[in-house]
Image (cartoon, rainbow, N blue to C red; front, top):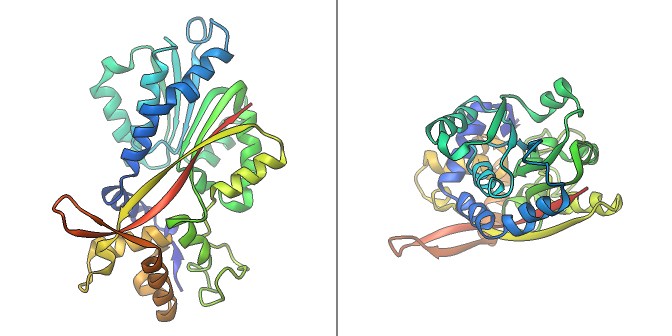
Length: 310
């Protein structure tokens, strides 16, 4: 029987890093932050909060699943232009990633003058269990980290996140849509990592599936509770050429684990299930040119960027 990728933390981290090496996600999110974060988040926070925030009292920022800090850092640099004092709380379960983040802050300390960091090497769930929701934040940043909540706990998680916000605060959430790429793949085959992997596509599973939370899930709950939000979107491209090479490549196998969120996908799922998944990927991929003008196979995913207000 196959298992969810999250069952093996080392393999999950390996798959995550392999995905980033073969994807332009970091670039696309970074471009959005550089282009739109100031007008859609920084200026709004500045307009909504009194003049003493960032002067007498720090602007409080919570990063959930901050990874190595690339996107948090871009946001903090822009926030510094409006707020001279910032309290940045970082919650990241991977020790390797949080150490990378800390090293960047140490190496470029001059860029973080006025920012006080608080580090938590733990899951969001453990962080809440330990600290509760007494501390409030003006900005909560969740760049592709809402998935760790799981779809069955999503409504409670969103209510909890709202409780963590200061009035006038913003949750910045980047999340996959359900109609393209990785989001569509995993939610079309939700039972890959369960005993029922050979059941019909989209048939409900009696055990926990590897279904990913998507932006439709989030927005339906926000609409239900009449929580205000605005949205943008971007498209990211993942080079999956290695998944279709005749030779059995390490890169291809790890990428498939990440795309399907299934541990050792190629050798653990049934043959007919493997064939169906690979056919699905073929039907939904595109062909683009790489830097050497050769064809590369790409899996395209549209992602929503939600700015959720309180």
